Length: 437
Image 1: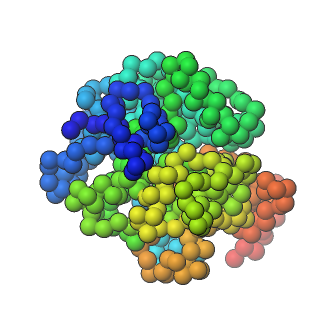
Image 2: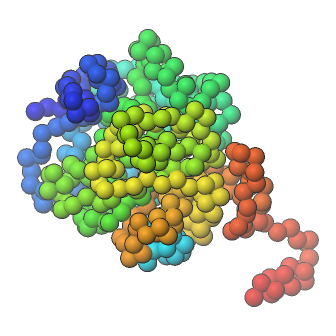
Image 3: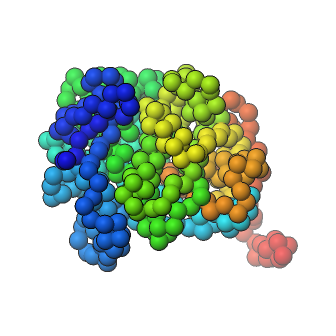
């Protein structure tokens, strides 16, 4: 069977051609996913091929996404793939973060090492490839930052026109700067993320613009490879837990789908548990996971968090995320602005660094180990989704005691590292340094 789009709704499961420009099922309105026949190659052979490609200089093989192209076989022809050598992100041990989180050991899969500094690149190379296959000329996204940066880069590299819609006044300048630098037409709209996305979906259909938010099923296919690469890097040893931030829940959907498919195809023997961490002021999925009735998600009408990458009150991918977290025996947790800020400082002291949304993972781990949900000796991998330089103002304000939460209350600089001002005096500087021990 060639690649198809299938309705994710179990009561429908209608199939459609991947040549159709659709994001929801035309029959029932459900989310769509790409589906394929299982690979004909044995699992051991695929693992060997993927490992051998690490030494290849072929452009597709140098991509940490397209290296695993047998796992995402939706393109009839790979010749027009646009790659910026995305993926290839490290797994980093972090002993200090492990201690803070109540674990014997913790590793971070750091997606901030991607070309534009976030996990979005894994999905965007696939979304851009599908846009080219559909002969689209313009692509668009609604974004609080990382999506806009990634889409602008890949669209421009592909010769497409990128159009970014973003909530006015609700974006980190480090991310906005990227969209501007990569040539995107950038429109700041008065409204929140969810309101603007509803508007842009109508505009895209009216004007023939291809939408590259995480509702796009081909974005999800690219983000699946984060889990394949992780397992490859661990020599196919499955961790007990994979912990990730939760915003629009595209990564949760992608990771769960990847892990299920790897298990079905004989690449891994079991599923790890997924733990999704949300900011307290923007935690509709956390609320859903604790509800008696999980048939619908109640949006947060006015989401608020300084972790702008997960400031989403009505995540479109919640049905997929609910299925994946439930199937994995996973959990959802929420953390405060203070917990995120302190966890971010701890990650920084590991020499790693990340954007605020990423630090929700460590804050969540600390709560989950304290509650006994995650054992101290568990094998845990946390995914850091964005680079430390994505939100420089947040860092400076935290370390200098000037960071204020969205509710107007100050966030304590518990692990602050403020710069010191000293006079231009050798003896004075010498005394100061000696006094540090």
